[in-house]
Amino acid sequence: MPKQVLDVGNCGYDHSSLKNLIERNFDAKVLQSHGPTDTLKMLREQSFALVVINRKLDRDHSDGMDILKDMKADEQLQDIPVLLLSNFEDAQANAQEVGAVPGFGKRDLGKETTLKKLQPYLG
Image (cartoon, rainbow, N blue to C red; front, side, top):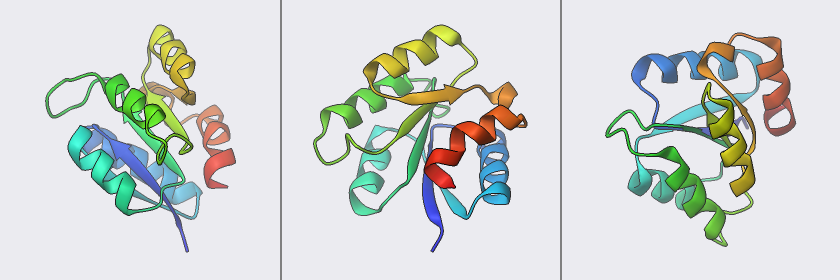
């Protein structure tokens, strides 16, 4: 059975790029959520090997870090690996301080280093 990845807050184009990258290279299926309410609901109802959160959510431009913080504060969800999708190094550092695994930016989607970052969770 394929592992599931939850893509949080990406626009259609970026979601499609991430989905294609993951589903082409791993036995995994990528699902999408858009904000805190649907994300937390899906996380409680299904099993995910990885959550990828956009730094700024496409739907309302709210901060994806808020969802990361909510997950890490929730006993049921805190052990799910989460990475931040952001080109900004300071955002990546802040996410890791809160408990995220090392993430990557959208401009890194086609790079070998990105696949290596995903391998521990999806391989």
